[in-house]
Length: 215
Image (tube, rainbow, N blue to C red; front, side, top):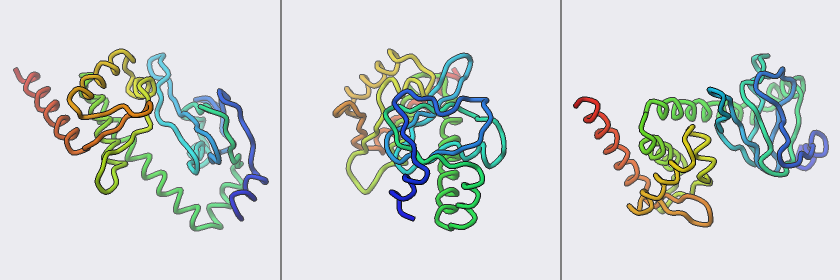
């Protein structure tokens, strides 16, 4: 069954700002992004923290279906979206009857576990500068191709939300990284020209932090 056929059967349109589900709510459906972007966020200490943004071809809400648990996060349409809405029974049939769907599920879950590990590692850094540099370096290395810079589709406000930092502080760190030619701002997105240089700078910050802690 082609993508268009799937959308005709399971597709629905959602305007920007629509909350698909909230953290703690009972689950019953999962979603596949056909068009648009969906922000996944979680409440921590009374603050809504952005965990990730999902785009075309990515899916969300599947974990609650798999483990029959309440929603672990909140999903909100960041722009007008076209989504496939699949209930638990249909989802199970798709996984059982289609090896490609099952493989994509495993790959996605593995990637999400790796991202969770990166976020946990990031929380170990108390210094805002180190947290920002760590996130950018890890993301650039994950998305890097063969040679050339890496474009990160991240805006400052989004980055601040993901790291639980004030926007002004993140802007200050980005400005300093720009002056050091470690990152560039192009058309509203961050570009890391040389991920290896940013990783070396992160190593320096970590060593510096360790030295200061030992002093």
